[in-house]
Structure formats: C-alpha cells, structure tokens
Image (cartoon, rainbow, N blue to C red; front, top):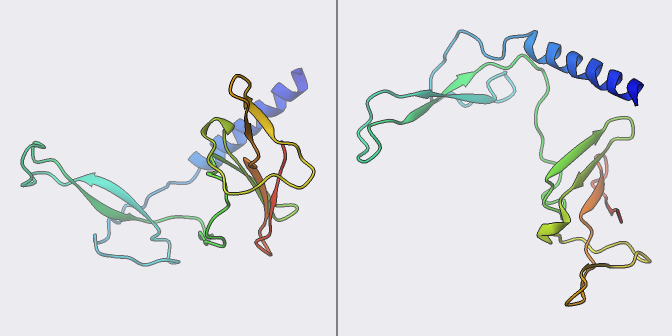
Length: 150
C-alpha cells in the first residue's frame, strides 16, 4: 500500500511538472476569425468582450481568441460512436486500444453483453435485468469494438 501511494505521488508530480513547465498560450492574440488547424491554433480561449448590446445580461459577452498550442499532436475522430456514453476513457498505448466505461446506473448503452455473459439484475423487487455492456475495448487500428462484461 505504501509503495502504491508513493508511486501515485511521483506520477502526480510528473504530470503537474509536464503541464506547468510550458506556457499554454502565447502572447500573440491573433484574430478572432482565424480557424487554422494543424498549425498550433487548435484551441480557443474565451475573453470578456466588454460592452455588449444584449439586454438582460448586463452587456457581458465573450469572444474567442486563438491560442497557440505547443504540442505537435492533433485530435482525430476515428469512430462515430463507441456504443456506451463513455464517462471515462483509459488510453492503452502499448496495445493500441482505448477502454470506455460508464456508470451502470444510467442504463445508456447500445452494446449487448458478450455471448455467455449473464445479465445483471439491477432491481430485485421488480426483477429488472440489464443485458447491456457498459464498458468496451476499442482497437484504434481497426475500430473493432469488444464489449466487456465487468
């Protein structure tokens, strides 16, 4: 337990150092209509506009200003739907897979449990069962979705 806690603290420090060691935004504000992608202008920072003319809101609004990113990577949509609502995602880069999972309380899933896996009884009073997977493993290379039972 002590070794796990020590490792967790070390990883937390490394992540914090990585996040705060480089500035997230450059001093160049750019123009609000700049929509370049792949050139480091992928995120927008919201800044107060000042005196707006909208009634009932005190004249407050926001305009997007382009922020420069320091990372060479990019976001890519490789799958339209995972089949689960994906409250959490775990990246598994060593095996090129991603695990998505959600709380079972919402009962929002489009993926059936794997064959041979029994359904879960979630309401013993009314004998209601849940035969849907709330966790999936997705292969990044092929897009293959594998439902997980637990």
